[in-house]
Image (tube, rainbow, N blue to C red; front, top):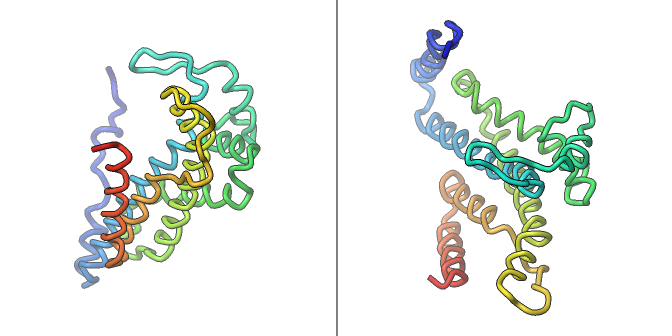
Length: 219
């Protein structure tokens, strides 16, 4: 196995921006909040990416071998063909697929693209961003991300997950879908409010949500 020399010998960037932050006397609590915000943003984005892209892959999955999953040819025809630029990009194609089903509108798609751009900034250029970290921008985008996560995950739960599990459990009739909401989006929103917004009510809301989830699971 070979690696390009610059790929593994190049020193990682990032030490200087941290040093500049501290040398300029910027508050340590701002550094802490920036690191928590960015880390949480990247983690929650993975949940968003799952409900936008991976759930759709799973819907077309035909098998796998532990390392790879195989999808039907319909995935290329029905999903990848929707890429507005014809490049068969999974994220953009999946957004269009959801839009065609009324889950997302054009404004939602623009918001999704902004969120993805912010995620890449935080994942790849965080240390360069720290000295002038725009917490207001990332907080706004985070809240949009949780809202969109709830919207898409709720749709998947109502349209696919719950009907399938309902039928598999042998229940008669149809499940009541109107009250179904994304539990993971609720958890993530409350945790963010608790940790970064310091909302004293969030802890009680989070405990109530956990208690409700345990009751549903029978544990």
